[in-house]
Length: 327
Image (cartoon, rainbow, N blue to C red; front, side):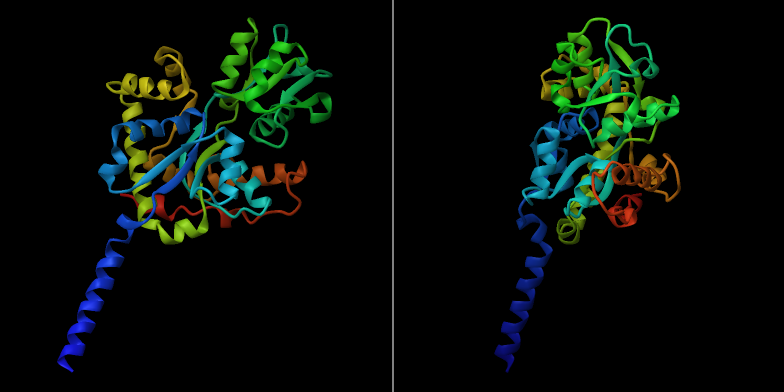
């Protein structure tokens, strides 16, 4: 009898040790990220080894934007960096995901760029606009048109992949394009005299950027995701510190093949959100000041333009608990 008890105690101890070290033995969290300043910012933590310091094993995998969502939908990665509207797009196509943290909101880096002679959105009436239909720049354009007393029927949309918008503007086939940095900046370089006629700075909160994760990963790796959020807070503070911003810009520029002096201005067009700022955006409210309110507006947009057919329960796609639990 005593021997059986001893064996049982050893077994219990072994199980306890396994559970306690499960995170250490688990596969790395796999996160897809792409070429947007608020997500390239993760490179600072990657290069400096901050995830290891935080005790979390993370693999960041580099993608073009849409392929990153495809990889997430295929179950190849645990989480993906997307806009809040596109998190809903994935959900509407059957890929359940949960937005657990905010990285930033676009503050000018998303833009409608017109060729020389186009001074405002009103000048686009009857003209062609190259844009990736159903995605975030489409929403930006519609928001701007509405503010100018116009509708989508006042322009002709030419469905264009965002990373192809610089070439499309240069081709002369369209009078404007919709793109985010660095694509929008490249478009302006290729067409001298072209300029933004409407940007995300005209509607702060229209475009929030998040990490969306699979429900399974959130349920099984909650402690690891909490560590990822803490690391992000460190990244934001490093980039926002005048003493270290140049080093951050150097790291971020290297990731996308630009010079630091070229990349540094792009940082200002992205309002990075630390934990304290993210908690405020996670507060439930109507309008663009809240992730909930902004996502409801995106939900209505997606329905109106048949991105998906049935209205989504926005609340089920947002979980502020991990961010709100941070000190």
